[in-house]
Amino acid sequence: MLADGEYGEFFPLSILLFGYNDTVSFYDYPMTKEEVVKNGWKWQSPPATSQHQDFPETVFLPDDIHDTDRSILDQILTCSDCSKNYRIIAQEFKFYQEAPIPLPRLCPFCRYRDRLALHNQKTMRLILCAHCKKEIATPLDPTEFRQILCEECYLKEVY
Image 1 (cartoon, rainbow, N blue to C red):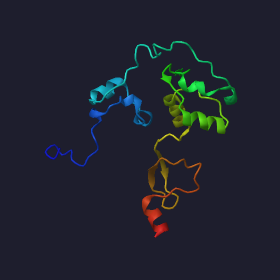
Image 2: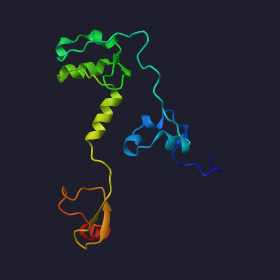
Image 3: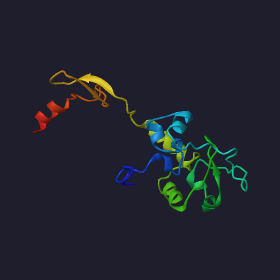
Image 4: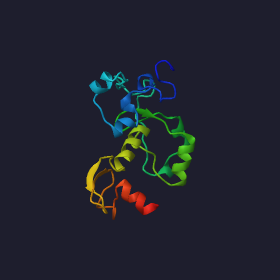
């Protein structure tokens, strides 16, 4: 690692256990399969069938958590969006009962994807500094913030 200049650096993406499209980076920096493979990274292809072979039946999930008993913890559920299998664990079931929230019909990956969609997109905008009118690039939305300053003006304000 010393000879290659890799010592002290992040692990290279080529040794990831997961495909690039199954990481958080994929949501921030989406790439096509061809781009990922060209970089030498892994791409996770979905299995031919994602249904669990031993449990092909669909489990009915009631809308009210109080209509569900602990036997759901022994069931394998299927995501209504991507058809991946997932399970409800005891701590999660307890949380849903105390909240009270109905059991999720989406797998954890689809729920995470939906939460990320609610976040602000990381897009850079070119705007003018509120003080010196110098053009700056920022991810902040100028309609949401009263004034956005360049680094020099910000440092003058703070110090």
